[in-house]
Image (cartoon, rainbow, N blue to C red; front, top):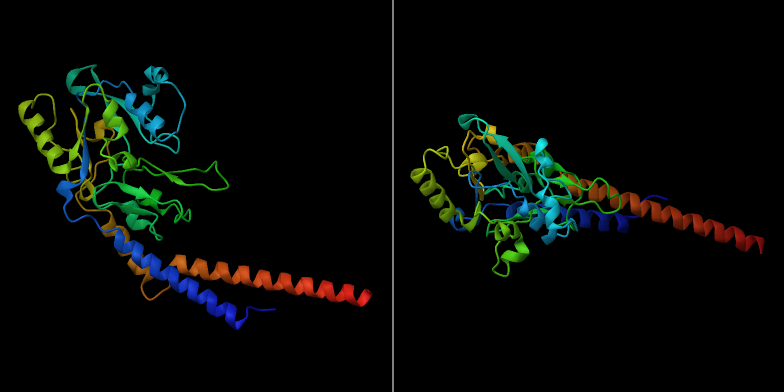
Length: 308
């Protein structure tokens, strides 16, 4: 038995709601109007001592690991470059500084919380959105697991719980939004013993970075990474070398969503967005399966009645 007229109308109605939700989600992804007042963190890789306390604080805050703080004193992890993953929202890597011989410096890596986040722009269901205060936040209840965010991110940050077959989620730094909500600094900033991480508004952090490069031109490259890259980020970096030597991607000033949205608009123009299409097909399949199952039960019941 095919899909009934009533079932088809209900299905189309739900799919239409999905389209409206998708449009609303895209509207929420627009950047905040005043980037200067968004929360930001300045990462000073020159004064960072590579203690990895920020890694422990992040893992402890987000309940990613029960390892003791003492275990993070292991520096053998610096033998290879690491990236954030589903069980580690931030990592510290070590690099050499050719300008000063064998001296090395360390760089903390995490979500950059872009002013115009590519991940949020690429998300077709609004699972990733830009909070007006700065953080790029994730709603697992909306996520459909398409992982477009992973492809779109120019910093290769979002990670996926491939090992969780039942309810996998996209994982990344949250900017400790729950702590920001109660007036606290991000956990990594709060534990940093050498003030390599400084928290404030984006304008304050840019002004601080400029003051440091002006007062110590021999220590820093005169460039604030994240001030303009990819349209600007709320995590900003000072380095003693070029950005590529510090493991940071070389990006121009153009926001990535300008590219991703043009592709999406070309695909979706005069066409049903994939979310609505998948919802429609899924509901049709479910309804058809239910009706077929009902027909099978009825036929079985009629046969049993006849036997009696």
